Amino acid sequence: MSLARWYRHAWYGLVGARHAFTPAVCAAIEAEITAAERLQSGELCFVAEAASDFGALRAGMTPRERALAHFARLGVWDTAANNGTLIYVSLADRCVEIVADRGIAARVAAAEWLEICRVVEQHYRARDYEAGSRAAIRAVAAKLAQHFGEGGSKRGNELPNQPVLL
Image 1 (cartoon, rainbow, N blue to C red):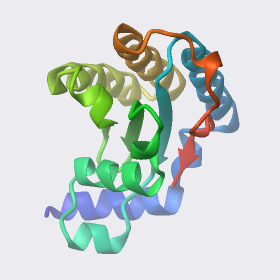
Image 2: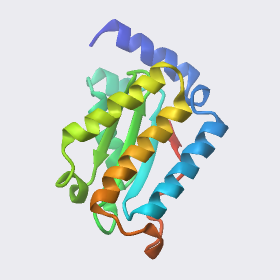
Image 3: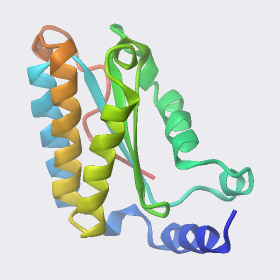
Image 4: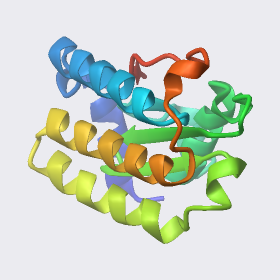
């Protein structure tokens, strides 16, 4: 692991995610998720992590592995229809990962998720966290609508719509 990565994680660990994801940005993310879940039956979860903890860094965990760990820890995999999707943002690693439950992963290619991630990362590089987050949610919701098109009002909300800041 590079010294630069350690430094970025130490810095973002001090600064935290709230500098990028202000209360206004978090409210916009929550509203976007709520609107997206009305249009299709998939469940969305948004996690922004400022920095990985020391143990994860020492173990050499990649952002993808961190996303998978949060996917499991937050129970995104445990939706009734296997249609949960996690949008994970690592500020220190400057990347976005999308993890989809097996009901979705079988229908949407990894390359499609990767394309969404790269577009969102461009917004984040410009420090436009609200536009990037909203773009991510809309793009994921569009993919979900292709395969889980019925509206979400027929079932309860299985995952919180508020972003999780770590």
